[in-house]
Structures are given as structure tokens and as C-alpha cells.
Image 1: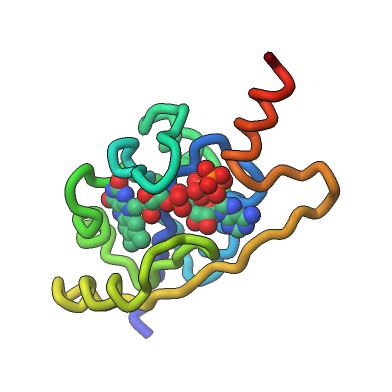
Image 2: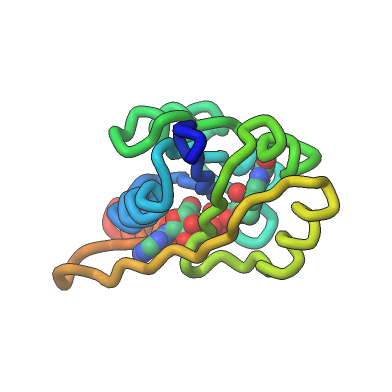
Length: 146
Ligand SMILES: Cc1cc2nc3c(=O)[nH]c(=O)nc-3n(C[C@H](O)[C@H](O)[C@H](O)COP(=O)(O)O)c2cc1C
Ligand SMILES: Nc1ncnc2c1ncn2[C@@H]1O[C@H](COP(=O)(O)OP(=O)(O)OP(=O)(O)O)[C@@H](O)[C@H]1O
């Protein structure tokens, strides 16, 4: 053992925070000693509606969570740039993230980044009215505050 802390990376959009996000970050943190979170740039969120909140505000909110050691704004062009800088031991993908683990593993290997890839568990609602999705919170706001 080197005695160096093991670094873990989690990542995502984190637009309007909810308990599903906290579950993911706590689960990711359990894979190592230091949790680093990469916040997706607005321009790179193409698979769903763009975030409401700015890149910086989303980074600042995630950064304030106790479980998080450091939150980083993602790179605009190349998602592997922050990974090279952070040099993680483990990357933990979200339970429902569309990323292909084999493709990410191959891209990491090509760049000489040696780290494990894990998949986080999901959180089910703990009570009837618990909302575990930013999209659902936005839908609720739109239907209740018109
Ligand atoms: C290992 C990894 C690193 C990433 N790094 C970045 C990054 O530097 N910049 C960025 O805009 N998006 C980055 N992304 C993409 C987003 O974080 C995220 O996967 C996606 O855009 C939104 O996911 P969500 O719908 O689960 O929030 C990265 C994704 C992965 C899997
Ligand atoms: N209920 C949940 N349980 C565990 N992880 C979750 C849950 N909801 C979101 N996450 C994780 O949090 C990270 C960021 O997710 P994201 O910002 O896309 O939130 P979201 O609420 O799912 O968004 P949207 O509702 O817009 O799809 C992802 O890794 C995702 O898997």
C-alpha cells in the first residue's frame, strides 16, 4: 500500500439537486477516500433538455456538499482532460447513465489512464411524494405554479 488517498470520480449534470444525487455521490464516495465530481458543461448536455442553472452555480452547489471533496467544471471539448488532471483510482458511473463502459474503458486505456470503472446503485423513492429526478421537479413546478 502506498498510503496515498484513493481518488474517486463521479460526474453528471446536477441541475436541481435531489436525494437521488446525494445517494449517487455517497455511493461513489464509498469506493475511495477522496470524491471528485465533474460537472457536465451545458453545451455537452445533448441527450436531454439543457440545464436551467449555469455551469458555475451547479458546480458551486455540488462543491458545498459534505460528501464532496472537490467539484470541477468539465472540459468543453474533451471529457478525458479533467480525468487526466485528477488521476483517479476509480470512476463511478451513475446507475442510469447511458455511457458504454467498454468504450470508456478502451478510451482510458488508449490514453494510458489506469483506473477501475464501477456502476453506482440507484435510489428508489423512500416515500410516496419523494421526487428523484430534476426533470420531475421541473414538471412539478410547471404544473403547480402556472
Ligand atoms: C468519465 C466521464 C467524464 C466526463 N467528463 C466530462 C467533462 O469533462 N465535461 C463535460 O461537459 N461532460 C463530461 N462528462 C459527461 C457528463 O458528465 C454526463 O455524463 C452527461 O452529459 C450528463 O449525464 P447525466 O444525464 O447523467 O447528468 C463526462 C462523463 C463521463 C462518463
Ligand atoms: N434516483 C437516483 N438514484 C441514484 N442515482 C441517481 C438518481 N437520480 C440521479 N442519479 C445520478 O445522479 C447523476 C446526475 O444525474 P442527473 O443530473 O442526470 O439527474 P437527473 O435527476 O436524473 O436528471 P433528469 O431528471 O434531468 O434526467 C447521474 O449519475 C445519475 O445516475
